[in-house]
Length: 475
Image 1: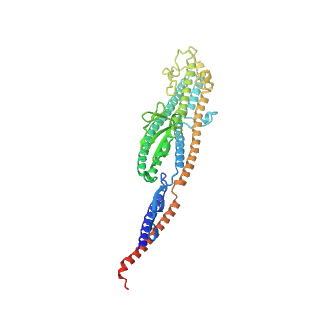
Image 2: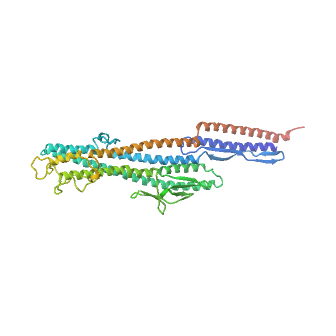
Image 3: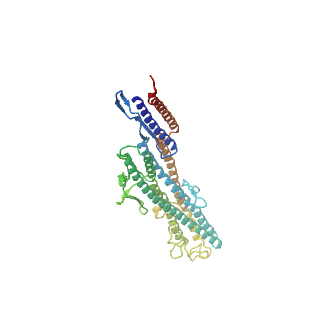
């Protein structure tokens, strides 16, 4: 009797254990396409044994725990790869927007203007203006040529202004994106702290058991890593301490257990990231937040600076030829020496435009020729000029330099995406759900459950015979 009851109990516990294993396999299969899910396994083990009059008897099988197949080292590598990839992809997007703001396709060669300009760009407008002055010099009294000069100059100033405005708009958009990213980061930090608290409470007496919460936290950590570089260190009860880099590379704590150190903040004027009430300075080298800041302050701002230098030299050199004494009317407004402000002087109209020097005889074309010749003049910053080379070569070099920057970032995105894919695949080989493996497990657990159920039915039938038929046996 005691043996049958013991076997009956063992069958019950075995069915319960196999049922949990079946549920776990089913849960794995349900999440086979969930990239934030880590495969779960059931640790099956004995409940132990007890001493009986007949000797030691097993207490049966039990599902001791459900654990994740997660590797903290691979998780950290994935977060690092995500942070690097986000840095470059953010720059790529910003530079592509900068290219669109130029209104033309950018090349990478500085030896030919055709590789860096087209008919819709500033370079073409520069050529058109100097060509218009050349034609004006050939017919200095022709009203049509005067109007053509003004039209070409107006197109050039409009393109410089619109290009600078477009680039400024790209920078403003980047600033907004960074600020939104900071808001997202603060939300994620709060969520991570909350998950830390829940995990700590659940795992105080059952380490590693809060598997769903751990998946949620890892997803938040990876999203946060896409914004900024972070390091996560697990504590005694499963709570993560999240840090980032401060001044001089010193770690700065963002989350400790269930507490957020303070809100992350971004100063758009100084381009500085800080955290907490004490405004601890942060130094980022990866992540989309820093990627946006670097793209705005480096590639796009350099292009705007080059356009400003071009505009300044254009205003200075043309005015020096058109108004050499400084006492007459300027061709370009002297107060507008940047790409955003360059404009034709209000005093210049078709009737006041002149091709010759003041006081010269009608038909004099020295001024128009002088301005036309500026197209081929080599300027030098060493000599006090705002640019080096000719107007065309300087602009072509500026645009091709921006094109080279975009090309370099494109290559970095390709390389880092490959690294990200490799690391993710390595992590998936450990933590990802294998469809074939889970189907095999499901079948194995199902057969084991059926076998235990069969044993239960057999023992139950034996007990029924022994108990219910005992009084009907005749001698």
